[in-house]
Length: 338
Ligand code: ATP
Ligand code: MG
Ligand code: FE
Image 1 (cartoon, rainbow, N blue to C red):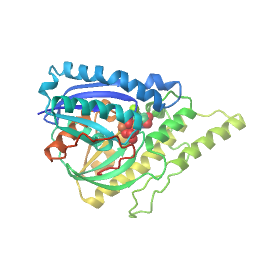
Image 2 (image 1 turned 60 degrees about the horizontal axis):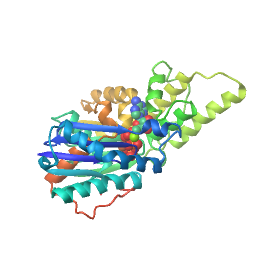
Image 3 (image 1 turned 180 degrees about the vertical axis):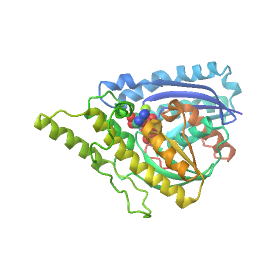
Image 4 (image 1 turned 90 degrees about the vertical axis):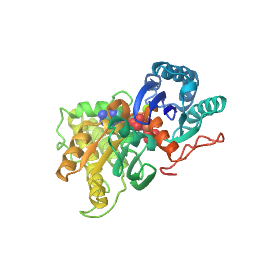
């Protein structure tokens, strides 16, 4: 079974071919990062235009690299939300056109479910159930995946996403966009205990609260940097990065481990761009091991946006009979498990 998938929810135009849901034959990712870098973030109108230019060449390249043609494809998957509406529409329109013209079943995929399913590509023996921590540029959510089609949302952020906090702090510290990887790198030579930044909604011991909040932490780091600048004091950027990162990681890991304990599952997975963060991987790995729980995470290229993860999700939806019709539309605010 061959799945072709298209992903255009944000600033990556991607197309992939995946065999039997788990084996990547091609995964072409055309990133627009450089285009948006001078604005310090993604400009939606520019993203849509670039997707229009890129989508067909990227699909052609995905088929060519997999050494197949459209006639060999059994299912077409496409991200239909959440994301930027203009960006989503480009992928959805392309997928519908191909599905209609070649009479191939179409499957609309939730981008966040795709991020979780990147783990099935990286770990071919992995099976549900597990607890998933989705930490991406726009989302921070704890999910209990009961089986391939049952997602229970345990909690999410009330304000900023973890990745958003990384990017905003990085921007203040004059790192290029997206700044998450730069903070990760700078933190390696810093002291995580140098500055006591707040841990919001950490919850008392044993209290069940799976909501997150990162906007207060963002303000605390901003104030710290502004105060230092006013006093003419020099700041140790590595210490700020390490202390900020430690605050984010502590809350993420505590809540994830709480969900693991409470659900009784023995597996935990990381998903989304921030899953590439080395401190988060190390800390969660350590804490999971103490509990006899296995931690899974994808390689960096499958953590950030890519179409292979969408193909994997589409395959399992296809197996479950979840086929879309040609009325499929982009849904910018699509929720998980919807
Ligand atoms: P969403 O999936 O919520 O729509 P998105 O697709 O823009 O958002 P992703 O591509 O999953 O987000 O992830 C991008 C985010 O991951 C950025 O915020 C980036 O800074 C962050 N990120 C990537 N690598 C690291 C790292 N090593 N440490 C921290 N953050 C990282
Ligand atoms: Mg991106
Ligand atoms: Fe994403």
